[in-house]
Length: 230
Image (cartoon, rainbow, N blue to C red; front, side):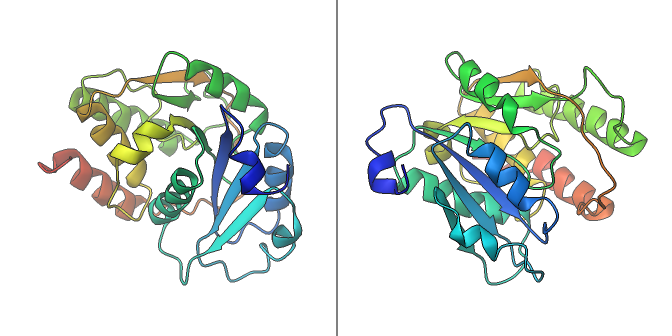
């Protein structure tokens, strides 16, 4: 199936939202592997200034949305989710374009949606390969979010997630950066959506993280202590 008109006829349709920013080396690999498990991909170009997205436009089963500048992952995800909602998909997968998330685990996440509203990849059962600072920050943010949401949040920083579309209709994030993924959990829990986790491997290569630690911490604290998470 190559167009949304055909895809929307599928009763239990699944699409993937993949935000990307200068992912020339990995983008096409991630897209090709993801298409093995979903009907359609919405790839959101978050202001890339390399040519990573040019060949992407020629692939069937993929819609590329261009943002006019680099806003941040949260904004790119929000735009992709809105497109998925308006296109009539029932289940939505989000994953990164840098090969840190193996698409072959998509069926496991989707399967878990039979019992939960949000399913997140959990890398913390096998920490080998995860940088120490990421281990520490993930452990701390997961603890504080567990307290905030009153649900057990195991791996708060993993962007490999599956959603029932009802969640995306009711939960809208305002943050533009990485903290949007924490904001999503806080707001979803407040609306009584259930959150679960599926074990996935920890994959880190030589790529430079786009997360700016100080900015990310500030954004997380804003989400954590905000009294308007609704």
